[in-house]
Image (cartoon, rainbow, N blue to C red; front, side, top):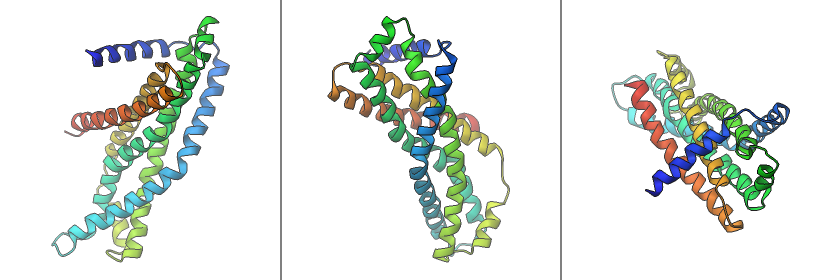
Amino acid sequence: MKFLEQFGRYILFLRACFRKPDKWRMFWRAFFTEVYKMGNDSFLIVSIISMFIGAVAVIQFGSQLQGSLVPMTILGRIVRDANILEFSPTITALVMAGKIGSNIASEIGTMKVSEQIDALEIMGVNAASYVALPKIFAALFAVPALVTYSMFLANVGGAISCYFSEMVSVDTYVQGLRMDFNSFFITHSLTKAVTSAFLIATISSYNGYQTEGGALEVGSASTKAVVQSCIAIIFFDYILTQIMLY
């Protein structure tokens, strides 16, 4: 029953968020600020993780193929498809849940406990839309962009791993990257990225908006936002994979 109650409040929160902003100029200003913060602050961590995802994938899959009758050119194709379909969209989304999800929840939670949101409501401003909507739309733009960047960089990391490990030549790896490419995989990956972005931003905003108390409650809201976002990402990752690929 508690889950249903929380889910109902979440739906009502979304209903309040997705309303026409009171002032479009303030909305766009907040939107571009949030896009810059989400993208710029997450650029380095996504770069490092993506490079090592591709490098480790080459070593893991390559060690399984060595000594088999399968040509090593298939390694590039396996790593490419694994990065595009699963590693980049899912791992990047989980990293973003910890990075921007906690920031969103703590920022809105601090506004709530310091009564800034109450002041907005007293002035007749739709507080939910004012504080959350720019963050939601910014996440819908920033997360897919970072996932696209991660897909490219993961394959570059795989090539670097080939160069240093000498498991397979870089030319052979690149030849595999160019084999039988299915563009629908990009569509599938970006669909998961957009879904994950929506879940991260809305769940984090909801937890921050529901915060009551003081600093301890703000920290608790941030923790719940990250945990719930990660669970939702993994759940919808399975659902979308089942629907789109089978």
